[in-house]
Image (cartoon, rainbow, N blue to C red; front, side, top):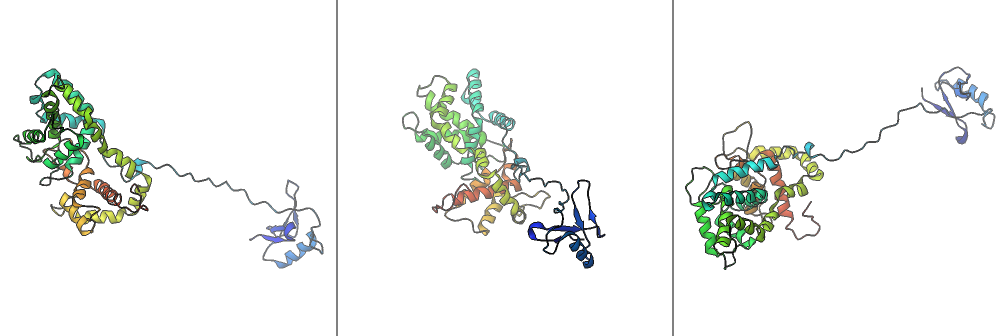
Length: 368
């Protein structure tokens, strides 16, 4: 039965069950009036018993308190957790993974032929290993600019661009012709590997050509006395400062591994899955785990009319390559050329960032 309130607003009396025209006297000694809402006669009787003609109470009374309820707990929003985000399956470049990559590249390279002294070779190896993360990140960027036959490798133009940025050519200790000569010596050796184009530097060759440039620039000119000193010197003389600009993991943490981007992607996840399923696997027989090739990614960008002056073809290839997870053996296996869905999501984020950061409109935040 619903509660009934009688009396003046400031001196209201609450009437609830039971129905008998009597006053309830709880153990607390407080008086409460009870009535049945459905019986108007009961209400009239109670009016005479508890209120006078001016509707003033005949004895002290108060409103019956509401039944006790457990206080509602205040919701506390949990902090954003990467492990619960859409990006959590991405394989980060851990130190053990990079150590395996370095050992793989070291054994494939011909650095041992360039540095014949075993003690100096060991010292050079330690120097390169300590700086391998930055070297590999730099290689990944310059190899993404001009894929050769579908394989990401540093072309001669990209290699020259890298050396120019680092200031390696000074026309005193090293000339432009020396760049070309070291590139040719490094790339023209016979190779049996499927993913090693002859006119481009793959990962282990990029490591090797860096050593050759160091020896050519500092050892032949007499600036340094030992090969290991040459390797350390070329890194210290501007090369490492340039390489540190291409920290792709730092970019992920700053720009896309956050709650805002995670929320947007999850909101559009069904659409993104459909787009990936539509274009992935067109070049190959359908498999349970679909992958997207570079050509399929390019086709999707063209069909979506996303390639323009703010997002050119070169940057389409770059976003594809920089989003790929690291593989140890990139010579015999092509997993680093097969885009999975988690890599597809990062590539779209990179594409959006590359496009909008170029716009001159101040209302658009390039970091959003």
